[in-house]
Image (tube, rainbow, N blue to C red):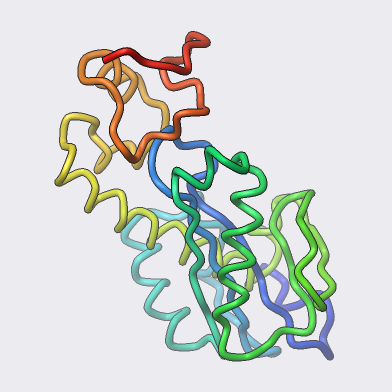
Length: 200
């Protein structure tokens, strides 16, 4: 059973990101504030849920949350500031948009760039420990999947509907055959062999 909060008496927002390990596309993050006494036995780390479960739970989270928001950082920004900083920035952008200002942030992972004026706690594998982080993981994952499905219509040869931008064999083979798109992260090892630049 996931925990409802770390600090019972504070307005706490759980934060998580999706798409950090991808070769293409933006990185997404979500911030979610749930009621202090919230319970949902189905809520879990998005990676442990089926696609259908994630989308069903997204509707529940958006209905039940006191506040929620999604932040996005583009591939161009990722290449400029690196993926770690981009993940933190996406979380900051999600927190920026919350209709309620949290008093504490619960961050999935072991590192974070502090958000101005709000203390935080990092939690390794937090999406499997706290409801608010699990909820954030589901929102970040599903909204990013929607985005990659749209990009797939523009560039179907990369199989983004199937791989969501992650470094699958099919994705890398398409990069070899067709080159890169404006959505690829050019500072990443796109071919998996140390080559970062292309002359297509």
